[in-house]
Length: 194
Length: 312
Image (cartoon, chains in turn red, purple):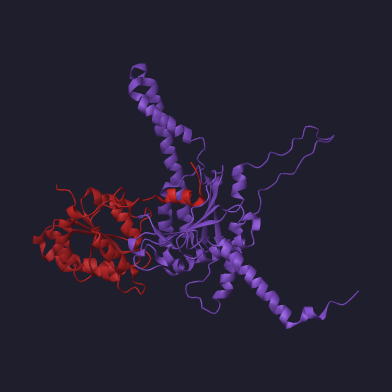
């Protein structure tokens, strides 16, 4: 049996991103990931269990009617005590993909695991520096920025991005400026000598 | 007794007093605030045996980033950590405890490793000693550094809870009142009561061998002193706590200014790419160091924002 290839979708625990959950359960998205060889779709839906359940049942009907695209298992869960560490490790092992809302915490965590990442800024939020962050990160080639209407088209791009992705945190030492760790800055601010 | 001269009650006298106070106050403020134009290097000082650092945690994202910043925290230098948490924010308090447990676990793993290494050295014996000199030298270097023990465990940190400056849907009218309450409450973690003194037992007939009580350890003293360093990354409570620390410096309470305590570092959130946050815009003028994590923000705040790469 071939190993699972996982697409993990996380939508933020406090204010779930309903539009993203709906988007990843749409037939065109499901077909796109099946075509790219994914066998599992794992969704952290947070408090939006209802949305997920409805979407998932429609999705399974679609999958049953079009078995040609290959098998795909859809799972969902609400929260994880471990802060998604287990899920990230799973994706890392399975050479999978993460699709996430553009929260800075999640972005940092995913990139630390070196996983290919598509972020979808939640444009419904008033305070929209999520989009700023996503744009800046995409410019530096750390991740791909998508939106809820074009996710299916992003999947083939993500396969190529796996190789082109820049590693994070950036290695800037020696290039044109000195970098410092925060621990060093703390000592320096107090004037502590070794 | 002669009545006080009437001149003391005139408006002009009152005005003169006010102006004098105002001038004196602004001069003092100029003195205690960091020099905005000339970024002076802090005067070097010897690392004290014990240092307390105050860490202001905020809501989910702020807390996450702050603990990420502190992942390489040197507990042998920063021997006591006080985590300041807004009332009702159980999540941040939990994260702080987990973070401290993580530090402990890391230390245990490191000790185990060095022990295993030591065992290995004994096993391999003399003929391999040559090869190991380099490793041994490295190890020795490590041990000299460890003259300062790492300070971990519940005795070396505490969690201070202060009321929120503004609840999520609170009206703007009542905010000044709650903010003032927060301000007053933030003095508690800043100026904790002195360490408990044991009753002094003087030698007497009843108890001839009574010894004077042991002096409190430097760790205890530091844990109950002003913090040497305050770290924050922008929750609203932080602004008020920094204001409280400025008041301490202004009046040199417990030598806050004289002893160079309460130094402040502000780290702008990684999510801020092009503009400073509201807390950032306010605090950039009063904190000792202001760090940003995107090149585009370098030099904001009148040239005070420093960029040293991504820190989280």
